[in-house]
Length: 339
Ligand SMILES: *Cc1c(COP(=O)(O)O)cnc(C)c1O
Image (cartoon, rainbow, N blue to C red; front, top):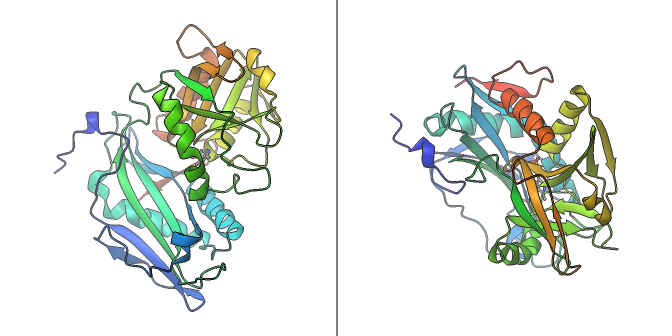
């Protein structure tokens, strides 16, 4: 039945059979609807188009070694979408509605879920947008929550291979009291230029410093930053980084493996002291970084001999083994979707 080339699917968009939608109108969420159209019909004065009243999420469904399909911490994504909604005055979708829509989107597109063994997953993209018309700057009265899915290969074609990163001192993706800690598209719009510059110069992505003083590491474009020093797992505490569910989970995992977790401001100079550094997120999973270049400061930091370090490797293996259902899930992170 499946004709997809599971070995070679990219991390990119492709059509699937259905998406799932729910409208908030007249003060209430409606029924969950199924659509086979990839188009949205909306008012040209929708607030999402003019004032960036929108937020999104990203999570994955994994086919395990046992053939069962697992979602990873979907309630965490639901709660984070509520925080995003509150920050930009959208109607927060109830957690149960969000989770049920995710499950429904997975079930309806079961033929697109990559089988076990290829490192590929079904990426799930929930999107919440203000669809009510306004011309003055104010929140919409109507919202659409839409969830679509797309089968994806690993974010980095090379798989678990270290990447090179660039520090961009000429752009900020988020301000300390801005919207960096919620998942709104505006943060990504602000990062597109620096990502393009980094890519042109041959880097995988950008690392941002704190916008106010440029003294501390904030995060990588779409992923959090981790530094390893001996038995310490160090990750920046900052009001302008997105609270990554991957990072939160890796911290718990690291503690269970005997590491000490430090969440605190990470000064730029400390880059010289780490044994290993990595970025983490649903898309990047845990991707080691082998080189960080700061063209403005004229500094280069290198890690390891081009290979992933032992701590990153240990964490990556333990983490993905839970997601692929290869070992028991002692944390209660995964949920099996009945197809
Ligand atoms: C989504 C996102 C992450 C990763 O979060 P996960 O929950 O781990 O997927 C990190 N940084 C930014 C800016 C993000 O938007």
